[in-house]
Image 1 (tube, rainbow, N blue to C red):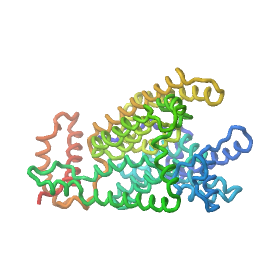
Image 2: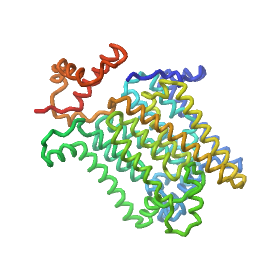
Image 3: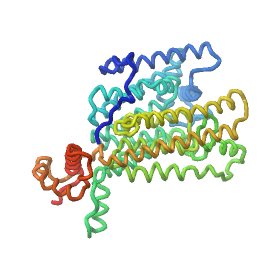
Image 4: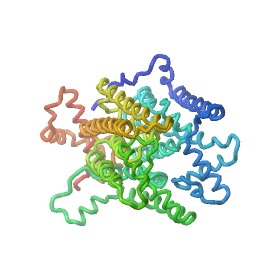
Length: 482
């Protein structure tokens, strides 16, 4: 599938110079964050409505406890790995150092964008188009604002981009270590493990009559085992170390809390009102919201990765994240960054770009749905007006429906492309070299033209391009029968 026209993403004339070179582009991205950083300091000092995110005060308070030799969990509502509090220790030094974490998160945004640009180039985009797609992240005011307010999501997004980069570069051991660290840092990246594990397998059916042991050895090939060992080892070592230092509070606040949390403030989820009502139920009593994980994990951990991962790993991870956030019983604005960082990689082969009206309609619907909720949430949380039913709940349903519709389009786009873009490592092919495979291209093309509906392609050029892509996939994925 050709990379679609990106006219929908063409910037206004005033910003065209910014994307003509990489230095000017990154200078603009860094400048945006510097401006917002200092504006935040000004607003905090002169306005009753603070720019700094409330979570940042939680992070820095926890760092102060660590600096005194105490547990970060001495700070109520600290629900994160101790590593985050350790990383923000300079923020406990006072003065200008208080904003150290904001600077760290903003730099993480830039690192994520740099890795994103590298991945876009690897997908075949020329420099300027790659910069335009990267601008969805790097020049996005929403992304820059969330990080400079002190949300740690930018740091996590950089870790996810590093994970994708390691897979693209075929560094399986490194990818496993990054995956284990990411899941320790924040639970949700575990969903990516299924897709990565699945895409590292051979793209062929087991040989008829193969023994059970042979089938198992083919399924757990060298790369899959390497991913499992390195990711589980990293995750386990970090958890054991943190448990040895902080004990049960580490397990409770970092992991178990998220299974029973009933946060209903700033929550876009349809479960919002239900969680509010559940907050009045005695602790330990069963509630319907306990079943929220079933549709969420069924989609993001099973259905989407198993069906789509071998077609396009980047787009599959994007679809997984959209499904995870959309169906999560707690959904805040920070969570949108989890999938926004993957959005540019999906857009390179998206119908939302190929058909601009569709893309614009989805964008408008997403913004309108969010705006409707924010209007109701403002009345509730700032004016004290009870808007739970029908206003807040109804707007949550609208926003949920919009996200489900967009998720459906993402799944269809990924499924109909049909070509894997993140390839399994060369080392596990175990068959003929590229030169040897090329000698058999004529015979393989003849076989492909019998088995594939190439006659249905729109033109001779498209037919030949499709055949070349099939040949490349065969040489990458199908091992020799020797």
